[in-house]
Image (cartoon, rainbow, N blue to C red; front, side):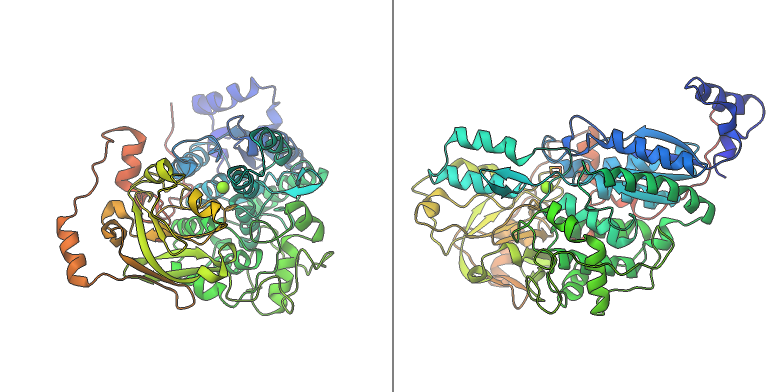
Amino acid sequence: MRSAAWFGASGRAGMIHRSWMRSQGFGPEVFDGRPVIGIAVSASELAPCNVHLDRVAEAVKRGVWQAGGFPLAFPTMATGETLMRPTAMLYRNLMAMEVEELIRANPLDGVVLLSGCDKTTPAMLMGAASVDLPAVMVTGGPMLNGKFRGSDVGSGTHVWKFEEERKAGRMTEEECFFAEGCMARSNGHCMTMGTASTMACLAEALGMQLPGSATWPAVDARRFETAQAAGQRIVAMVEEDLRPAEILTRAAFENAIRVNAAIGGSTNAIVHLLALAGRVGVPLEMSDFDELGRAVPTLVNLMPSGQFLMEDFCYAGGIPVVLSRLAEAGLLHTDVRTVTGEPRETAECWNDEVITTVEAPFQPPGTGTAVLTGNLAPEGAVIKQSAASPELLAHTGPALVFDTAEDYHRIADDPQLPVTSDTVLVIRGAGPKGYPGMPEVANVPVPKKLLDQGITDVVRICDGRMSGTGYGTVVLHVSPESAVGGPLALVRTGDRITLDTPARRLTLHVPDDELAARRAAWTPPESPYRSGYTWLYREHVTQAHLGADFDFLHGTRGSAVPRDSH
Ligand code: FES
Ligand code: MG
């Protein structure tokens, strides 16, 4: 046991390690060589989606004690999506780094990762993968379905909808204020198939969560039962020496990509899985998402693309059903290891409307997230077809260019804005280095002038991301980004752009020599950051198609016991 280097040490060092632990009231028997299990808890009142994880940790502890381990919970930072500015994504890598270092620096033999909100799940997986000690994830579970005036209301998704209703004069400010309380009515993360639900589902698909663990609502008793089971299981995993590197294989990532397609998951999963693959040295590219996802029908009918919410998905059987249906159709690697150490069991579906069948899917294969390339996105871009308007998926129109999202917001409601339904809104300066942090600003609202004409969607192209709960015909993650001189930086208002999703092309109709001349005249935007974390981030973040991780965090650094502290 790694922990023996601390608690089993003789002399002064061992005394220091044990004595202060005993100040918490632990008896000497906890130092008998039993596995020490860290519980990484990202609870924070600044990250409401994670705030109940303290209680989940108590359930994990019960399980660890039951299995003969010694549980020690520790707080990690929490990248809360709703409050952090300029974007929680700026801090995903910092959180991953913190999780990695905390695990390695402490007397831990295994770790249970408690996450919830969007970035907290990938951050914890990335950090734990780089240490490669036995690890199991327990996500905090979704909120109960939002309910407003008798109808289901989805986190995030209805923010955009209510905003459109208000702009169109169909809802008052007071009604929106009332509705916001109805949307978030329990602990948990967003209960749409946004990024948090997606990443929880993919953690299960990767094999890092216990079966069924992704979907139990945050307040469901079985969330805590599952957490307790995870506590029991991690002790056995330490004894079996079952490490993330054995679970996070290329086959596991291929499974996760297919499950992401089957659940209609968030586009953000692409960035996070690319970053995680980089940690464990699994070769993975943007094109894999298109190629592997294309054969997969969307089975799960959840907002933002569909109708239902996570509670419904849970009661229908959750991820085990999706995995069973994909496996049956030959769309899943079944010879993979997971945290259970056992082959996956076949699960029965309790509601075919929520989890549709491969034969009669919610959406046919090839309609999920597509990866585009072309002279406007040499390293790729992403479009979530299921969230887009079908008639705009193949579209040519004149660009209306904004250097920042703020520039657009300032005049978005101007009745004189030179837009028609043909316009392609280009929003740049929102990439990993440009913003910095690659925020979720790509789905800028449709100009009021168009909304007033009854036009509710317009093609948007951006080097930033979109909330997993968002929708619209939005081309995302354009790489390289404008701030590093990607072609997006060279577009001018009036240039014609073709989005050809069926052909997976994104084309700027400007001759090469003209583009070369514009490039020669282009100067990179000046960075205002000279020191501090944001400076570090800008210096070292990779482009979206590489996962926007830090270049110096790629790979694993192992769990060797560090040198003595005293
Ligand atoms: Fe935290 Fe959606 S804001 S999960
Ligand atoms: Mg989000």
